[in-house]
Image 1: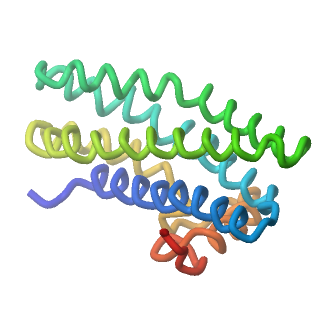
Image 2 (image 1 turned 180 degrees about the vertical axis):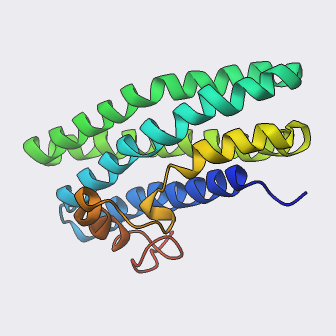
Length: 198
């Protein structure tokens, strides 16, 4: 069986999101080294993207469609799926906290830089770990256990995501947002320069 569309979409969305998330602490570290303030509008755009796409499109479909199918066929994954669902439940609150912390840094300046940078590091590490568990445990189990009918249902739902960071045309209202993000995120998901990972 070839790789179902849903799995390709999830992996593409994970790859795009991971590239963007990894770029945020690298950008912040570069500005710290230079003694400059970051582009707050660009950071707001990146965090807004996380809220608009992964939080509102990607996670609900995993929680409401993919995970229940796996729970029914793989009871041994129930604890892992519960932890991933709990991560999804905390996601909206976590991104709001990060957006607030960014606003505090922008409005209050240097005294709030370190707190925001530390919060970004924790958020990114947690998100990357979450996606790594899905890639390592959940997606292979889905490939092995789900039926063609399951994949038909999932493919229809996930194909509607059309995340612009995975190569889809942005809706008119999002064009400026994605133009700004794509120019910051390193290839292959964006057009930004390679970042120093020291």
